[in-house]
Length: 193
Image (tube, rainbow, N blue to C red):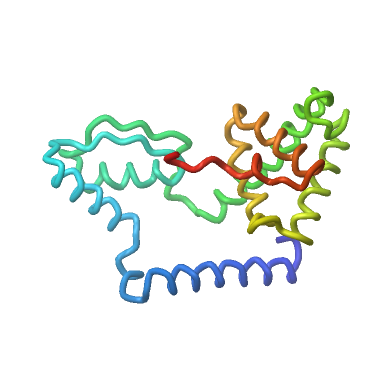
């Protein structure tokens, strides 16, 4: 947030998210939701499978979870890959740094999409692509399509920014939405489909 009103909106959104989690999980479950509890659950799964060690790939928060598991169960931690490591420092400061990096990466994406105007049709400059992006987001804010609104759009963009192989599908989805109002290519694929 850049001003007091923006900060109030941000804090209200965080409270709404926490209330949704509380409502969905129930008050009794909330006390058991923590990184340590999740690491202990991981070890229970390891034991149930009869495995001597847990081998683990952790990305982003998963890197923090993997480190917590290895700290709690050093004799049961097997091979671990911790990618895009999140450390125990101030999560707020980390989020601010990550947000700034994502905004820079989004500008790189705009330039990349402008490099192939024949395919994407979003503009021949990063500025023109940025304007097309803004139009799409504004249209989705005014009229979501099949439950796909600005929040879902933001998640699709966020998901794409970290992996350049997702840029072309995002560009295709943005193009299709602006031409036909079809959001099918903007929706991320089902994780296990």
